[in-house]
Length: 175
Image 1 (tube, rainbow, N blue to C red):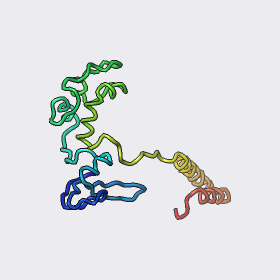
Image 2: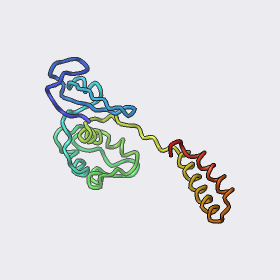
Image 3: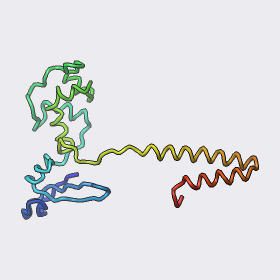
Image 4: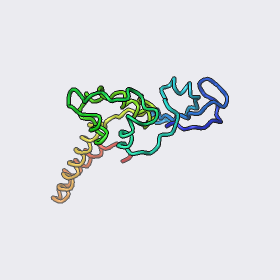
């Protein structure tokens, strides 16, 4: 997240009062804020220090070709050579038709990303899917709990004690 404040010293080059970008990053669950001047922010890949305005995505897409500061040619390239999606369809739907549309409308998408996010380079967190082994373990414990309840209902306490011990061995300490 980047915000403006002209009263800070740049952490990168040390220019007094030049820091206009405050970049907050979270790495390994630690938050770090860097105060940067426009030049150092651009070197780090943070483009456009203006706060993005809160427009719906379709509004941004509608302004792509004629919005202020839009990059690229004034006339969009022809329709996507793979799926046939036209620029007008892209603006109306707000969705691309296929992976090849990214190449066809690249200059317009870069301008959109720059205006929405302030950069065209991803600097956020990396998605890590949940550990499948953990969900399998939870399912096994749930099955054992049902078996334990049936053993208690049947008054088979020796079997219930064995199942209880298995559950305790599978659960993390402190649960």
